[in-house]
Length: 445
Ligand code: URA
Image 1 (cartoon, rainbow, N blue to C red):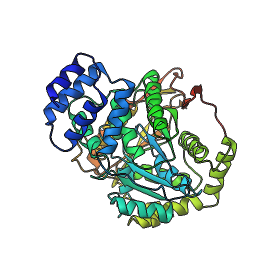
Image 2 (cartoon, rainbow, N blue to C red):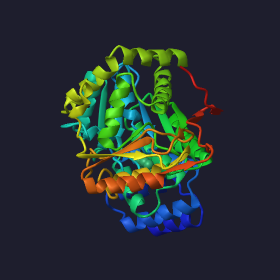
Image 3 (cartoon, helix red, strand yellow):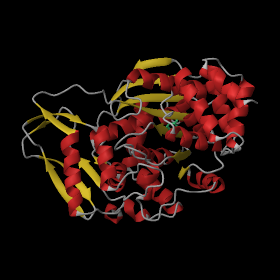
Image 4 (cartoon, rainbow, N blue to C red):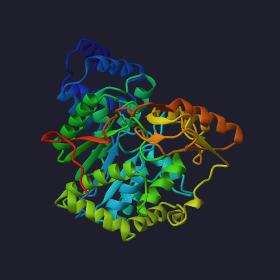
């Protein structure tokens, strides 16, 4: 294999053969192709794209670069949910225990927050003692024992993706649909799933803000899943404002626990239930949306979902007492109330500004090496369209020090706009995408 010839061919807009692409990816994973050549190749892909066969080959080569979880011996459905990330998105913390409490295996491999977006692992690690780095053998055993594990990617699982994603992150080559689709689907198919639900975010806080691009990504991922016997359903959901009220790791964990006890802000509950219903339909445990919604409500009202979360936390070394007493989560030293600056309607709650504000408070990361303070963040109780009166409390800043409250206040001032009339935003859930096509979303439950 002569790597410069492959780079040149892609640069000139031509396709690589299956064998060429597979060998390039596997050789890079083994350390036989230097970063500078792979970076040049990825930039050529950024401009010239990959066709369908190349995207499938890339994903298969990534899968072949490491080991897989193997649950083929389990006689139950194995379903996961993947979100494209955003601000305030804590649905995984509810869905994993909720769906597992209904008898479905949920082997959930998640990521950390980076830039303005949060990450499930950071929210879980807000729970004292919770361990997210587990071996593949430990993860397999826990899924066999209690039906769910909430863990980070290991060195053995899809190492080619780990290396390529880190390189893409530093060479401005992340936002390429076939690369994103192959990257995510390689990790999801390595979980030995029988079904996958995608939460594709649209709007200013998403890293693919336009709905058309989100739909394209959904279709690419659905095609990759179907080609490997894993049915995939995608919902397009709004990320032009944070999801729910809490933004910041421990605050979000608390809000997720509130929902497991039957509470939670309406938008967070609606998106979580919509994704959960798709998981239950894919698993075959429920036959209709109505049945799926009523099963989830029953598992929450009966306490099984909260108990399953306690079981998962205890199995992963954490303080399961947080589920009945959220004051055991890390608490910020200082709080400051933020009031509406004028009478009118909320026209904007900009998620990127809130995400960057969390970083400024010490609760997020700019590089993977940064450490996070789980206690800090915001609780924002208004949404675009809400009517407010000047001086009405609309948010709270949680900070380590009194001096940082001012950073939080300035963030909210920049992120939240009040105008004379309500503004149009993204629909909370706009589309449902399956292998059969795209439909407008219909609410149930
Ligand atoms: N998340 C991933 O895991 N991979 C991508 O390419 C983008 C987001």
